[in-house]
Every structure is written in C-alpha cells, then in structure tokens.
Image (cartoon, rainbow, N blue to C red; front, side, top):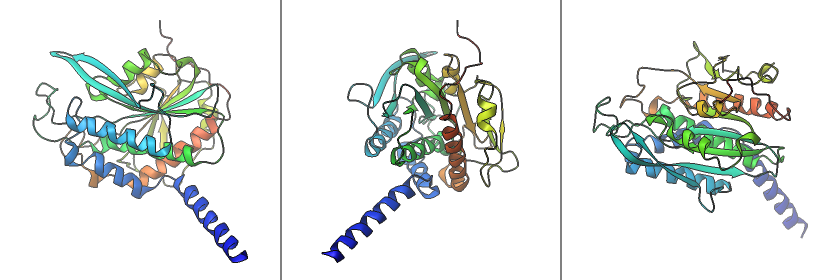
Amino acid sequence: MKKSLLLLICAGGLYAGARAQDTIPDAGRIQRTVNYLASDKLKGRGTAEKGGIKASNYVARQFKKLGLKPVHGNSYFQEFIFDKQAHKDIPSRNVIGLLDNGAARTIIIGAHYDHLGTAVLFDGKYPIGQIHNGADDNASGVAGLLELARHYVYNHTKESFNFLFIAFGGEELGLQGSKYYTAHPLMPLDSAHFMLNMDMIGRYNPERGLGIGGFGSAAEWPAVFKDVQQPGIRFFTDAAGKGASDHHNFYMHNVPVLFFHTGGHDDYHKPTDDAPKLQAVAEAGILQLGIQLINKVMTFPELHYTGEQKN
C-alpha cells in the first residue's frame, strides 16, 4: 500500500513538473508550429484560399486543446467579409479563444495567421502562382500566440486578468481582421487592459534587437519596462501606436498597445520566407521577455491611454 502511494505521489509530481515545463516557451515547439503553418501544404495561408482556411482550423484546434473557451457562441471563429479594390465579398475569419479568470479586465494577445498565399488577390504585386510560405510573416507570431496561451493556461496561479487570444485573418489585405474585430468586439474594448501584437518575431538580429512599438500609448509603460531584461535578447522601444499591423486598430480605439517585431529582411513578402530560416531559440527568448512584461503590467490595475483619441 505504501509503495503504491509512493508511486502515485511520484507520478503526480512528474505530471506537475511536465505541466510546469509546458509553461516555458519552447524553441522546438515553436519550430514545429512554424514548420506546419509555413509548409507547402498550406500554400502560403492566403485569404480566401484553402491553405488559409486550414491555418485557421489549426489554430482553433490548438485553442480547444489548451482549454480556451469560444466567445462567439460555441465557435472559435468570427466570420467576416470585406472588399479590396476590384475584389468584392472576400471571406475571412478571426480565430478567438478566451482564458476566463472571472476578471473585470482583459489582456488581448494577437497575431495574424494569413499570408500572401499564391498572391491571387494582390493584382500582380507579387508573383502569382508561387507559394509565399510566410514563416516569419507571420507563422512566427502565431507560434508565439500559442506559446503565450499555453503559458497562461498551464500557469497554476489564477491571474487577476482574463486573456483573449486572437489570430487575425486578412491582415495582409489591409488589417481586415483587426478592423472587423474592433468594429464588432466580442468583449467590450473599454475593458481591455492592453493589446499585445506579434508580427514577424522569428528573425532576430542581435545587431538590431527586438523592436517594441506602442511605448507612447500608455502613461505606465516606462514603469512597466523598468529593469526588464532577458538574457540574449536586446530590445528597443518606439513610441508609435500606429503601424502596418493589427495593433493599429486597437490603438485607434483607445486601447494601449505593444507591438513586437524583429524587423525586415531580404525574404519579406517573397517565396523565400521559409521555416528553416526561423530563429526559434531567439523567439523563445522574446516570448520570455513578453511574459515578464505581461506579468509586470498585471501589477497595474489600470493603464491610462496616452495615444490619439478616436473621434
């Protein structure tokens, strides 16, 4: 009996240890996520293309496995339709999962899952028919989104904020997913603590460092950033809350934002942005830095928006 009890305790300890390990951003898991999303099988995750739908289904499955709750009825999808120049009634969808801690305020973490696909909707701007796999842009951000979701789901401390995880569609065609969400929010935007957007975080260059935008969007950001550091990751801040990624629409709706990006490179929006070029170990470090910042933000009951006021 004592031996059985000891084995049970040991097994429980190993299980708890495994779950604790799952809370740490993992380079191998990041690489596997990007390998799938940026594979030729998904053909570049184009909006209104089969690969884009497959990518959204993949994210929804991961949200369900992690135990995130849907907030759009029983669906993880927020469907929408938009027009882009001569292209009318283009379908897309956001993928949304909630970690409900019963809190009054919610932290929004986002990344867009779409890329250029086979470039059919870009009117010849990119080589039509070629697969643009978009490993950095933005399979890297989706991998980060899933790692942060895993961290806060498996963290045994119940946080004093809810977490809303959003994988946006249609970003490459004009920030369409975040534009639709902020016009049709599934949780009140005035209860949003802040929004963290990750777009192209997979090609860390130590000479440049990680760029963090939105530093001018909340009065508390200097205090939040004070003494934050992550071994192996240099970063710099930029005051701008506007930008060519999904945080822009939240900023324009009076939500404080942060924007993580590792900068441009020669493979940007080209068929050569492939998974083997991902800097997965550095991305894991970037996400650990993000966790530090999120945890410090949660020590502030409210952030005071200092950006442009929407009319």
